[in-house]
Image 1 (cartoon, rainbow, N blue to C red):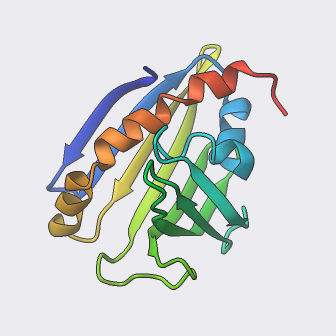
Image 2: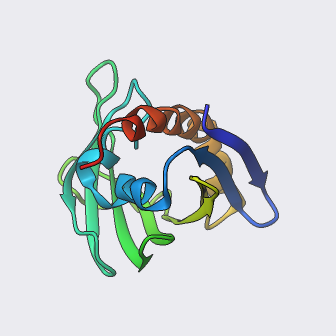
Length: 164
């Protein structure tokens, strides 16, 4: 498994995943930049993602859904707030309905992805900043920690393929 550490910090309202990959930083960056590669790992294996809108620019938006084993399709969105290629990506993240209307009851979270070269490999740190302890607890109860571990577990297979 590429995830080497998971840290829940209720005081800072963060959930952080650290993963290490045997691939150069530019290759790992492509997993975020290319929506076809992103959708191959963003959801866990039983909830694959489909990005039907992906504007990879600061101020850009993404819309996606995950398809569960019973056919249910929870929808989500991102607002991309910062890109420092190939080392940093930030985005606001939330849920939506099937028409893309954003849900407000759970609020949004803020994701920060950093990539660091480590010899011939890359360390990827993904931190979600929550708006409240209640939101953080709700996301953990919904399976966010397990889901991200499973999702990131798919990355090695994608990296092993010839880069596009």
